[in-house]
Image 1 (cartoon, rainbow, N blue to C red):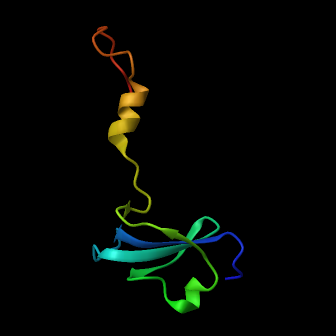
Image 2 (cartoon, one colour; image 1 turned 30 degrees about the vertical axis):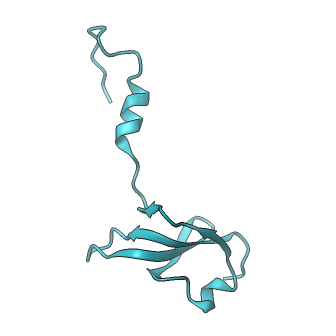
Image 3 (tube, rainbow, N blue to C red; image 1 turned 45 degrees about the vertical axis):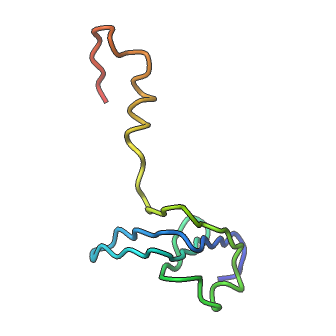
Length: 89
């Protein structure tokens, strides 16, 4: 981890979506490039924190790999409701 393009989000709720369904009420995750490098409870440990650009994630929920499909569906079908048209997604 060389610190280039490394971002840490701290103090956010984290739903890891791992096999155990691990969640942290207040946790962190560190992203290097396009990969999650570390995740855990509390603030990022010093071994990660000294290399990252820190971002405050209070009042936020981190859910890796999930997309809010509700809003995507609204965007994809905007203006088509009520016209008798079927939309294939």
